[in-house]
Structure formats: structure tokens, C-alpha cells
Length: 163
Image (cartoon, helix red, strand yellow):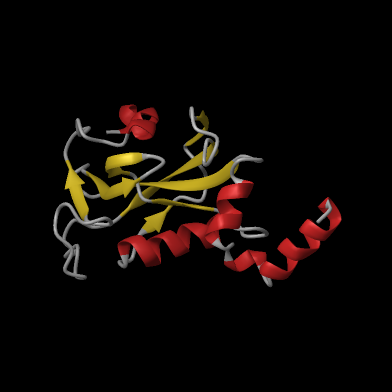
């Protein structure tokens, strides 16, 4: 199979790239180009920061600011709302002006280069978190933090000054 045939084959595997990519293709593309993601710095009226528990082979295990990778032709606002809907499930307010833009490169080739855009958000601490029945070590578990946790995912250390 030559390169043109390979590209045609891949095109057939992706009917609508704005809906996301098959995992294998996404991981391959992440070895070729930076991924652009939104991260949500969610605070409550007490100044606490909302973090999500992650267990990810690329980023590691620990606390993580909620976020997501922008899809092809997707606006920041659309990805922010999708992260809110899928990771938080509660009404989060956000400022559409980013408070930090960071470029991250890791040692690994797969998922090894990110451009992360941080948005300041607000969610009342009065809401009940984890209505989905998750417990503290389940991926996606949400918890308010008064200070920077020692077991935060290493790549998230770029946000330490915001705690």
C-alpha cells in the first residue's frame, strides 16, 4: 500500500472528524502534531479549586484540572461546554477570555505535545458532586481542594500558582 492509498483508507475510517477520531488514529495523529486543549480552573465561593481524579497511561494517576482536547473545527466555547457537561454535569460559569496559555512537551511521542488554554470558571460549592456514584479513587471523581494537592498529575504543576 502506498501513502496515497493509506490516506484514502484512513479517510474512510473517519466519516466526521469533528465528532472525534477512532482511538488508534487519534493516538497516531498525536505523534505528529500538537494537541490543543481547554483546561477549566473551577473555583467556588470559598476559593477552593475543583479537581477530577485521573488514571491515565500518558499523564499518570492523580488530581487533574477538568479539560478536554478541541476537535477539528470546534470552538473553545463548544469544547468548554462539552467538558462541563461530561466531566462536571452541573451549571458552571466561565470567562471566555483565557487566563493562561501554555505549551507542554513530554518525553513520550504519543500525546507528547499540548497547547493548553486555561479558563477561569465558577461553580457554587453548594452543589452535590459525584451524583454518578463515583468514589474517591474512581476516574472522574470530583473533589474541592483548598490548596495545591501533593498528588496532582505532574503536567498540571503549571497551574500551581492558581491554587
